[in-house]
Image (cartoon, rainbow, N blue to C red; front, side, top):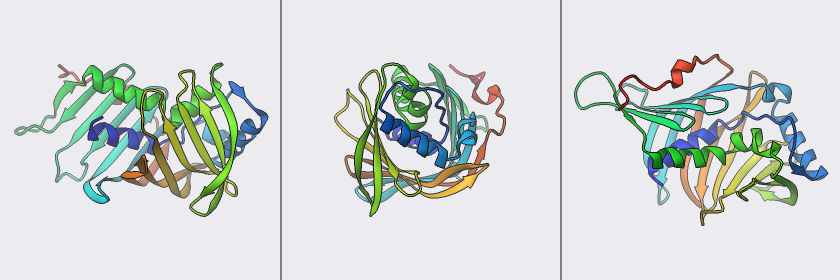
Length: 258
C-alpha cells in the first residue's frame, strides 16, 4: 500500500463520527448495550443525523519514530460514498486533491507550469484499495455493517488502555473482517479502534483523544494511527462542521479527467 493511500485512509478515519444504527445484525444483548451507550455519549440522535462532515487540520507522517512528512488538509465526506481530500492548503506547497465517488476516483495535482491542476483518473488498484479501507473504516462499519444480517457483534470483555478501563466491542462483517472498539468505561467514548482484515497479516490501530463537542456531536481532535505497534501517522483536527450542505458537484468528475 502506498504512503498516499495510508494518509488518505487515516484521514478518512479521522472523520469517523458519522454513524447510523437503525437495526442490528447478530448482536448479543451485552454488545448492543455497549454500542448504544457509545452512540448516546457521542451525541445520540444528533450524532445519528449526521450526513456530511467537513474537517481541516494538519497531519504528520512518521518513519522509524521520526516525522518524515507534514501538511495541511481539508476533508469533505458525504454519505454514503462521496469523499474529497485536499492537501497543501497553505499556498506555499503543491496542491493535490483526491476525489472518490463510489467506484470512480480522480487525482488533481499541481503542474510544473500553469495554474490549472492536472487531472487524471485513479487506477483500478488505487480505487480498490481506497474502497477496501473505506468499507472497513469505523464510520462505514458503524453505519452499514452492524445492521447487516451476517454481521456479528459481541462484548469481548474489558482491558486497560493508557490507564483507563475500557470495554471491548468486537465486530465481524460478512467477510469475517474484524474490528475491535475499546470504549472508555467512564465517558463511553472510543479510546481506540483496531482492525484486522481477513486477507492481510497486519493489525491497524487508531487512538482517539482531545474530545470536543461540535453541533452536539462529540469529536476527537487528535487521532494517531499505528500498524502492528509502529506509529504511522498523527492527525490534528483544527475545524469541524457537521451537515454544512455540500453540493454534489464538489465530488463530480473534473471535466479534464483522462
